[in-house]
Amino acid sequence: MDIDNVIKQTAKRYEKILRNYYPSFDSVGFTERNLTFNFCSTFYNMAADDELIIWQEVPIKNNDESKKEHFDSLIISRKEKTIYLIEAKRLGYRGKIESMRTDFDRMKKKWKNINIDEDVKTYSKYAIIIADIWIPHNDERKRKTKEFLLSEFKNIFNKSVQYEVTKNGPLTENERYFILGYVEKIVD
Image (cartoon, rainbow, N blue to C red; front, side, top):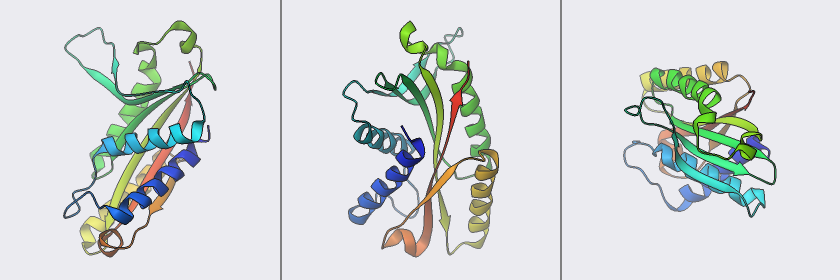
């Protein structure tokens, strides 16, 4: 599957949604769950794979029972013999960049700790970060901060993709909105 194209189509899906429905007030943003849901739905629609498995909030087994961890989403394609682990973030402040790095490293290290059968463990594996960011037009300080975060994302995840979601109405009048993505093969 061409993940960059899935991210691009996810951005187009957002544009269709935002033409008729703006699910936010006063730039409070959209929850991360919407990123994973729309990404996974887009993937499903593009896959033509009737055995595709998609799961949200994938539990990670830990030796420390008090530490509950999960991956945001999991896609298993038996047709492609591929596993995709997805983490989503709203990129709103500098700490989120470090959180994305931590999530990315965790996907690469802890994928074995999900409950999949031995055959699936031999599949190719990919870690995917999907993020979004709002850049306001009318607040200079916030605009500069968000532009810096966008630049940092591109520097850290240097082969990332970015798509601007466009819409008539509140989004383009007050801010710019981007969906970002990065994918890397997990090497055992």
